[in-house]
Length: 416
Image (cartoon, rainbow, N blue to C red; front, side):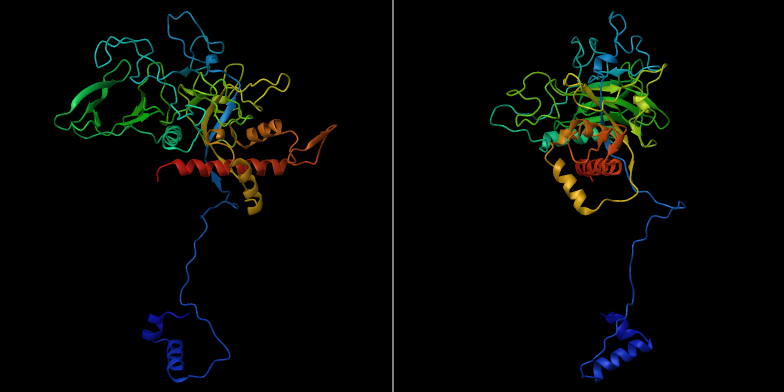
């Protein structure tokens, strides 16, 4: 194949010879020569390191043994305390805060606004679209659930912000002021004549971060982050760390067509969440979540305890009480072959979207899978002090393939 523009217009002797042969010689050639006039290639990333290690940063749901009550904030004067944080001490312990739509403490009675005279209620139920009767099946990929899962991941990664309007549309009605605890108004909420919500900041350039339910959590004024929830300490980077509490009937080892929480098969509690006060969800600086961030445990600090199994090995009862959502880093020195990736993905495609909880980081996931499926072929059998066969590398590749697949699923939920 020859560039016709080069052939007809170039003064190159090769172009002239080809053009002359094309016009004058009608014989069939017995030998063919190829000329490449240009080529294009994509260069690899430039790095000074000897080896460039690919990496992804998915949102992990790390299974923990602690119920929310272990660290739940207790209001002053309530005469109650949390087992692992009796002093509500955020410096030496994890503190879980229940968010509200207004940011005021639960039970506070506002004296102004549309809700004046009514006590503030918690707003931490995740309103997933669930089965309502025997004929309906759970579809975690529908519009409602996709929106909620997207909001979860966006707020974990500091991307779920409140849309601000530069001006107040004439004829708009004031709804409420969003006030910094113990401070002044940050932005005002209006309804325009068409019924659309307008959020007008007091100062230009403010960025307000919200959680999965749209509760304002914190805002950035160009210098530092400020809290918008009573008793909540803002993070240093605007991310939100969630503690997710599943329904009491939730069990990842059991598959039910009616779902884990529905009005027909499993009536009762719902999915709930709490905010981990003052803790960034970004753990991309560490290769493992163990012993870091909210999972740090020492004589002077009480953090979450990571679970390695869904069920207790002795009693068989479910021991995972909740999941902590964090963004971590996963890197691998080489990719697995296509056949193995395909097989691994097919196994886990049968899991529902919410069964990405728990995946943990690769080390946590390996421990979880080995305990869940002790008879699986990828699990080495311990004989005395020796593991036969030693499938350590296979287990790690298997776990990384699973996380890679779920990272792709997560990216599909994010707006482009």
